[in-house]
Amino acid sequence: MPVALVTTAAARELDEDYAPLARAFEALGHAVEAPGWDDRGIAWGRFEVVLLRSTWNYTEDLPAFLDWAGAVSAQTRLYNPVATLRWSTDKRYLLELERAGVPIVPSRITAKGEAWVAPEAAEFVIKPSVGAGARGARRFARAEAAAAREHVARLHAAGYQVLTQPYLTSVDDYGESALMVFDGEFSHAVRKGPLLARGAGDVQGLFAKETIDPRVPGADERDVAARAVATIPGGPPLYARVDLIRDDRGTPCVLELELAEPSLYFEHAPGSAERLARRVLARLDA
Image (cartoon, rainbow, N blue to C red; front, side, top):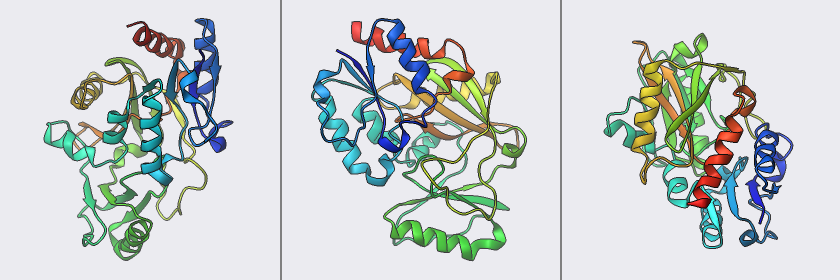
């Protein structure tokens, strides 16, 4: 029975994680295929395990994606599981992390019908609470509150709740730290350069282009990542990516958790694809 590294047609040639992970499974004696989650002709029960990878268009119809995940779970093993997907695909989970004492980038959710109020920050970011690849995310200055309010209205009209966060300027130099955690254990990390230029329009395509470099995270970053992963309902999942930004005091804060279809940047950490493949197979053996 092969392993499914699930994608979507538009992402199949863009996923830089696919080749190293496929090689890792094949080296361990497992055939690999890359079916699309939205391909209605797939018999999912013929796969030994279904691993979500580049399903980057799920935000366009989250209910359909979650229904699909539930149907797959009834036929074979799915990672990450449906309960994890339901919890993590809406960034309202940030408020749960905050209540649990995990430092986060200050976040406010505005539902359709609620009045949006501009934050006090000099600059801020508005994004859909269900989103991926920075699609729908825009950066504004305090003086651009009218334009920001129009963007909120557009997101509401498209059916999204809106997440507002201050723009933390440390990202301009230090960047984001993305920490990969497999089965609750730190694997590797990268630095992600700043993505959002002020005045830029919406991201075109499935994701914003990123500047990625290897990074050795600080002990404080590893601590916050571990605390965030420990807070996930059901315990640490098979894979998690924790994206952190340092605030004005230097404290690492969770920008978001990626538990559905995160890029894991295997090419920047030799051996990391093999580590994940072995974790998957260990779960199957268990």
